[in-house]
Image (cartoon, rainbow, N blue to C red; front, side, top):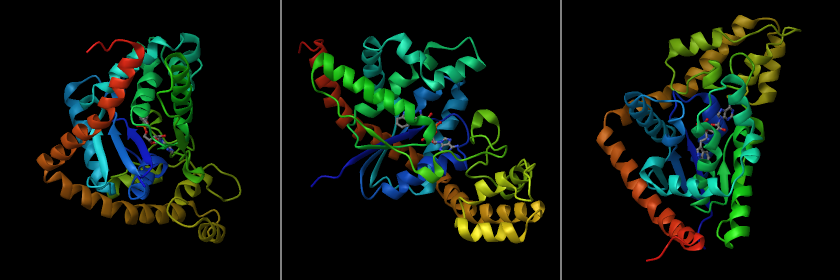
Length: 316
Ligand code: TYM
């Protein structure tokens, strides 16, 4: 029996943080044996925010090395770059023609972005169309993501249904896989950990950086219980064990933070070392990425041909 299919991706828009890891990357690694997995570097999604060629190249390389360092095995997983597979942008164009503006205006991500910046690009507005194309080309059974991506997957499902209704059965409806305990990893200020809030703990932080991030965690909680420290700490230790420690050390915020620093260092240090090993052979990493793009095209190419046939533009 053939394996079920998994697809997901990360935007190369800066340093990945432990929220990306626990919310998404860890699931990719844990599921790579069980599923036929396609893991993407969503570079055209990052282009909405990163508009400097040098930075973009660096960010793409960073995500690639991060994928390898956290343990994605290129023998099991197809690691590829979105821009290497032109079918993604082609299909997004077709989806844009069957989707209305009022529908996309209801997306949370659009509303949030609009609240921050009125001069939004068309790219940001159309973001869910490209993401729907990313997903639907590979007919995945599951899409592991953090909670902030749930609506995007619902949009992909709606888009698949609409296309199927207009042009005939073509796309399989994907399911999100969102791990409850890590659906929204909080940042150092208690809000969702996010690059745009500046409240992250980078996944490959050096010891001094970990220290700085943890010391900056906001601890104005009542009753001697530093909730913001605890919520991050529980990613690294069983909750029951941790609760006892936090009760014993009630009010001793500095000691608890020091313990979190040590636990983070224990978790991050081996990842950091692995990443440094991969950094020594960039040509090999690039080969992996190139081969992944070629493999991804073997799936997306025939699917796109089917779509061209259905919409009636395929004449030969
Ligand atoms: P991105 O690059 O913003 O984030 C990558 C993954 O990390 C998850 N995540 C979190 N999970 C828990 N707690 C947090 N604080 C946290 N912050 C981020 C995100 O939910 C995501 O799973 N649009 C996507 C990239 C993408 C994609 C796709 C994903 C493009 N095409 C197709 C899946 C399928 C994004 O911007 O993720």
